[in-house]
Amino acid sequence: MNLKSLAEALGLSQTTVSRALNGYPEVSEATRKRVEEAAVRFGYRPNSRAKGLATGRAMLIGQVIPTSTQHEMVNPVFGDFVAGASQNLAQHGYDMLLTRVPGDDEGKVYREFRARGAVDGVIIQAPDLKDDRIALLNRIGLPFIVHGRSTGVTEPYSWVDVNNTQAFRRATEFLLQLGHRRIALINGLERMDFAFRRRKGYIQALENAGLSADPQLMCTDEMTEQFGYMKTRRMLAFDDPPTAFLCASMISAVGIRRALQEAQLVMGRDVSVIIHDDDLSYLRNGEEIPIFTATRSSVRHAGEVLADALMQLISDPDHPPINQLLEAQLVVGSSTGPAPLKAARLPS
Image 1: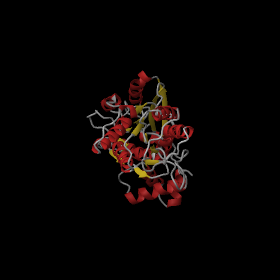
Image 2 (image 1 turned 90 degrees about the vertical axis):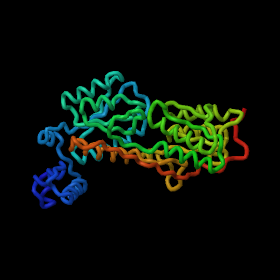
Image 3 (image 1 turned 180 degrees about the horizontal axis):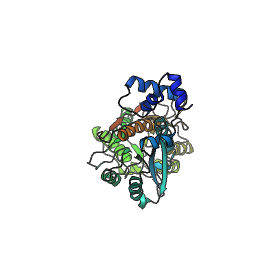
Image 4 (image 1 turned 120 degrees about the vertical axis):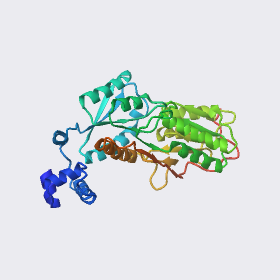
């Protein structure tokens, strides 16, 4: 369907439909909503090249992926995020541009984007603590939004994030309520903000219960299946092994489950496990009954929310920073139960 046929179906002029889809303020909210819903229903997508010529915009949103990246940017979570973000960007006539660059050249690419007008905005993924990309993009004036936050950055910027501290504090409290005291943390790279905040929530819950975090029960690395497997095997061999594991990723949790099965331990009876579930469309945490008790927050939904926020920032250059904190839901599955009277150990 083209613009003309969409306008005819709605009984509106092509100009009105075009202005509604482009967010012009003179179009009423009711008309804009009606046009956007019809565009989705009829599968209409504006020609981004024509729209760019009309508006003077590139109609592209950039994401820069360093070639050295081995963490969140290249695991399955990124695919679901892109699916959510690109879907909502497409409704505004935008395409997404993914650019792979050497790690040291990321700042150079942002400057080139700005100088050439190659993109109208960028999405920052996987922020580190004190991430210097935020200051750079604020300085050069390229609209941007961060998927996550960066502890230590004090200047204003836009972000969409899940409440990682609260999620892992609540998960740890749940295990404490079940009687667990030896709770292990299988975390992501803690130079990254999300992992730092998850560790913070875990420690807060322990301290509130009058317990000290045991450094031997905390580990941080790339969130792979092998990482979860190897760390679980090592901890089960302790003289005083953990009775529960709190894991930052579904992927690492698959490794935890493999280690427990090899040790002939029953998850939920001998050892409890709580994970963070990004509600991936192709890696489901069970159907009616979740496999894992989890702090659940859809990364696809985060992509949708973030894309809508970025559109606001691009359409209104004077718009104040947009900050949206999403809450994770604690869902109880079959992987948790009361702490056993005697901790299960890896057979010698």
